[in-house]
Image (tube, rainbow, N blue to C red; front, side, top):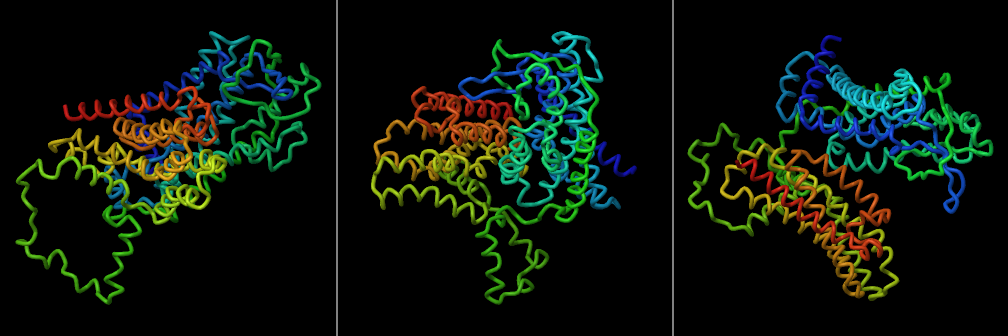
Length: 553
């Protein structure tokens, strides 16, 4: 227990010393304000889209507490994974892992200590949210400010989910192929939808009619809130026919029907269900010891791709033994020398861009290259086989076009942060053209985007869709600009991956017009959304250059 405590304490202290955590906590405190002033709503929606009525609770302490609890759960579900991740990466980055590996600390103790650090970070987030909720209710709330009623849902609804997310983030770090951009995407597109899938089974059902397995898989705690508030709702709207409440930034007008919830005794199943979330968390941390490797791979980045792995085994196939190769000790000192640098201007900017393109594309798994070729080639094949038929554009505009602008995220995510990841920042800043290197890195990201989307561009031009050119320009400029700005300012790929995946999911994939930066919908092009993102791309690139100049200074 003493070892466990000190591992958790050391990792937690390292987390709270980060200035970026202050920004996160400030945002969390702002959520506490939004919960009290009605910007974050918990309402029951009655009727259809043509005649929708909203029924919401009065902002008593008990009702605000439930909203705060769901807000904490939502923060952990949508952002906790990315906030808690990289606990192991920090030790590897600063060579702490080698020190820990030389001690008698077991893998299980080490990982459980890291998990407790994740839980402690979750507690800090909830403390800030709880404090902001209590203070703002005292100013904006209805009725007495009952601290227990305001804070209890945060502990029971949000904290167990935070512990589960912290364990999941740790498991992703121990599995090599999930410890990166692919893992972030898997969590975003697989685990987050699974966490809210149970709500679909409550449509038209009252709390007593919901099956036990549905309640058991309620990660957010929405069904617990449903059970607690349904009696107060039926007192105002007796004809309500069932369904869990909606939660979020819902546009409810002044005609919203109010109901008053002053609290009640929580059913025992809620305590059991929320406590049970800790069991899979403990199991996940225990299972993480299987793939966990205390030491990072000593292989160079040149051997991270499938082509390099194939070439590495060729000598064995040809019958050459590794023992026949000269070792470092057998090599003479005279042969171990570096070519002297006589001209620091040699090569030119073109070679620098070519080098950045090779760095961007190198090391991806074989299936990434296969799908990239398919995305670029499928529109051209369709154009050749079926001709420039306008009715064939819809699937390419709504499916293939969004996919071509998310698949390179594996390349873009490293932009801006690659020098930090490989500890080359000092070397780049000491070079003759550090700003040119940054611009070359950005151009490489743009070229990758153009390459993957070239097939769609050819198809659109062949069918006379000239208006889509601005969406194409926005797509190839925005992602690299956001990636390089977020990477160089945060020294990590996490912020870019979160922001870009959310924008891409809402806009290009689901047709959200206001953030459809690639022009997958006609409305977005008509109102000029891609123009806005082109301008934003220029601003983001400028921010990255400003950051590089500050690093040089």
